[in-house]
Image 1 (tube, rainbow, N blue to C red):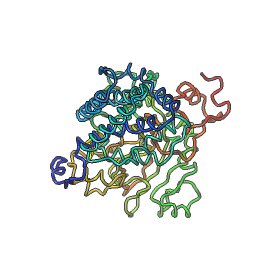
Image 2 (cartoon, helix red, strand yellow):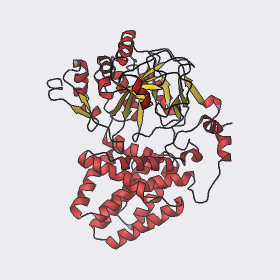
Image 3 (spheres, rainbow, N blue to C red):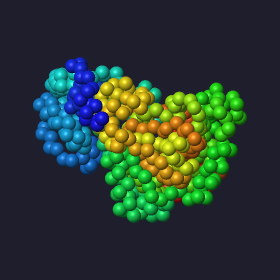
Image 4 (cartoon, one colour):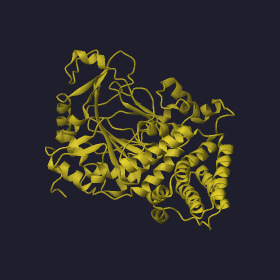
Amino acid sequence: MTSADASAETPSSTDRPQPHAENEAALWAMVAYPLFKMLTSPPAVAAEIVRRFDFGCLDEHLPPIGAPPPSAQVLLSAVVTAMDMIQQQRFPEALRCALIATRTFVELCDAGRHSESILALKACLELIRGRTGGLPLHPLLGSLIGVIRYAEKGELPMFAHTDRVTLTAQTSGVYSELLHELVKIYRPLSQPDNSVGFLGMNDKAVLAHAIGDLNADGYHLFERKVPERTLTELVRYSLEAPADCFPHQAGEVGSGHVDLTNQAADGYQLNAQALLDCPAVQGLLADPSLLAVASNYLGCTPVLGMVVMRWSLPSGRAPSNDLAQYFHWDDDWIRWLKIFIYLTDVDSGAGPHLYIKGSHQPGKKPRELLDRGYARIPDEEIERFYSADEIVSVEAPRGTVFAGDTRCWHKGLNPTQKHRLLLQFNYADSFAMGPPPEGPLLVKRSHTEVFRRFVAQNRAVFPPPYFAMEDGALEGLR
């Protein structure tokens, strides 16, 4: 059954916003909190919020849309036009209109026209609620409070992340698309040096092909592979470094390290700090071609969110939630790209990675499944909405590298015959509204000079609260 056929069977509800209304709800999510904050804050605080928006900077990057002198009608018209732009998925234009609405509101307040500004805001709220069927304010305000907390204090409250995920699902991904357009302005792309990297991204045609695949399908398989010497070192290190066992009770058999003979275990995940301490991992992270792919796909200077290595072990048990063996979509940050590296040969019996082509795009996930929130989905339910041709199995030899926008539905199959070892790097556009880390990873003086120099030259890629620098680790390396 095709996704179009399946969508026709999805029950409708009069109290649920339709797809175009979801886009309009996303617009309100973009503008409501800044308006609310400026309306309720003392003048000095409101002025600081406006300064942080840096409208002059936005004017230089967003498509021009003229704004006449401020009035209630201008505010209302900007909101209506933004709705139209979102419906057409013209997100930069929509963002400019939303910010014109915000700026108009501020200017009305600055001019002492408080009654007019409040009436205009009320009219906008009634218009949006009338066209969307309503939007709960709690996740709206909670997610955007996270932006303020991150900008002011570097904090990442978990409730802000959870609320953003809720709004992303409710708006079929449009909310995060709008936020990402804003992030690209504040974290402009600075082209990394990709002249030497092992993936060959110095070839513009090769890079363009990778970005084209990611935009269209959500995934790209690279032709070049990780050098054999590096693979050997990574596999050896994985068997020696501290690791957590899944399920946790199965770890009682082992000693806090990987035990491939442990029949009670579904898999192991290496300790994140121990993984960063591995020279071979540092070498890959310092490879400029990986950063080039992430930068060009996200359209901004990315941040490194996670470094993960997992063993998946064959068993006769049901798939493991801990090892992501049910279909799901990720929503860790606003936008992100994950780099996957097979460290063992992966065929149909070794738990290949599965993904659904193109399902990362806004509006490409069935409402019936999105209404479940951030949930694991059984195969038979996915197959109601997507054809077999849309479900891709990544079977490839050790050393294979592929990139994925894991807003796509995806999973790792439960291995049935062989062990699978996977290394994963997660790059994000911003940590704002992301999950708070368990603790920062420490870049140490003992790490390789190549890696420390790379960190020093790309400091914005390794910011707190996810990373900390040991005293002297970057000294004299710029």
